[in-house]
Amino acid sequence: MKLFTRGLLPRTLGAQLVVVTAAAVLISNVGVAVWFTIADRQAARTSVTDRLLDRVNSAAAVLSAIPAKERDAAARAMSTPLLHFSMHHGRPLTGTMDSQENQIATRIRSVLPPKRDREAVFVRLRAPRPGEVIPKPSNGTRPVIEIMVPVVRRTQLVATFFEPPEPPWPMQITIAAIVAILTASAAGALIARRVARPLSELAAAAWEAARGGSARHVPEEGPEDVKRAAAAFNAMTDQVARTLQSHRQLLSAVGHDLRTPITALRINTEFIEDGELRDRLQKNLDELQALTEAVLSAAKGTGGEQMRTVDLSALVESVCSDLDDLGEPVTWRAHSPAPASCRPNEIRRAVRNLIENAVAYGKRADVFLENGADQYDVVVEDEGPGISDSDKARVFEPFVRLESSRSTETGGSGLGLTLVKAIAEGHGGSVVLENRPEGGLRARLRLPRTVAAA
Picture 1 (cartoon, rainbow, N blue to C red):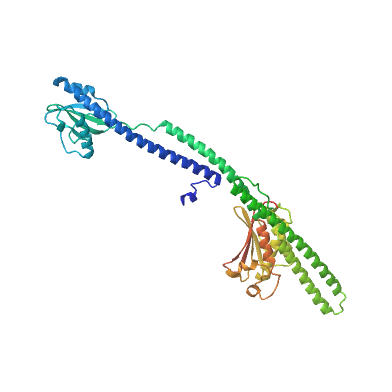
Picture 2: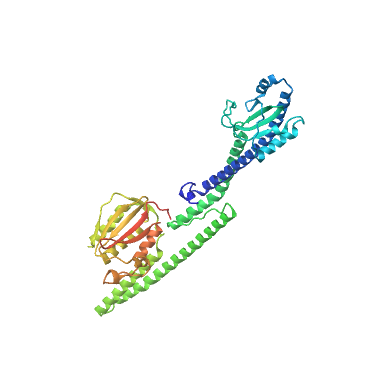
């Protein structure tokens, strides 16, 4: 199984189905062909043995009827490339025979005439003994059986049968295997098209939604299981879309309702004669309004702005320049143009939050851009104490602040990194926090070069 995961199979489901089907048909055809070939050879071997015994007995009968001086020439004349006849004069050739050799010898004795010496029958299922000279056919095949049959008294016919050459692989089996493989592959491709295409569209739609794009409907076609999966995905995307729309409407209403009383309170504070009290109330209202805007921004996340291609390097540089003009300790390392598909205002907001976070808790911010294979990393480094590994995930939760570990001053609403994470994930990217070996925190805003349009 591990071999299949190392590149021996194609990556797509359709191609895998075609390859596996073709391989299964090929293996089954080869197995059937081998099985029938072995069976045919066994049947042919039995038939050859029967014909061989008949031929030897017939040759012995013919040789017994001709003059003794002509028998050697007659034996040579009756020889063939696979069956060699010779005469042995004198004492009969005998020896120890195994069970199979005895079985063949018994069959020969059963058909010999009564006057023949049945004890002179001898069978050997092996090559000639050392020192024996038996002519071999020109094709170089080896002898597989020798039979000694009595012809007349003190004369034996020695028949040596040579193994025939291997027959060629049956062309009919090869053609049948090719036709079966092509037919099965075509059927596999048809099934793969019905299964893999809907699954591919489902995967593409899910990936597009995960990267921040709009969740489009996928066609509900293919086998029943695939249809149900597509229908469930469409129902889920509809429910998610309705939920998000309901939340946006609720947030818009809440934002409008909150801004109105805040504005009214700000006007009313102008009539307070106590200047110190008026300043405290206005400061509280400013904090309340800032918190309200931060909550609305973090809750809305992404989706309101259209995607377009911009120079990410120029965008980040402009954010750094704006903050530098305000006197913030921000440095930017020049970078070549970096075209990327994104929602510019959201990326500007995310980068600004990261820089302000670095300045607030790490004294300064060094900003630069790194190129990846298919992504850009907006890197923001500070000179603060960093954060513990246990807090790296927690800081992205709403209203979580780590002032006790990163600064002695309290600041922010605890929603800055939450908003950064929402924007990054809405673009199909991520935000990663790393402690620098030399001290300080490094924040990476990872953005793909191309993002599906919402």
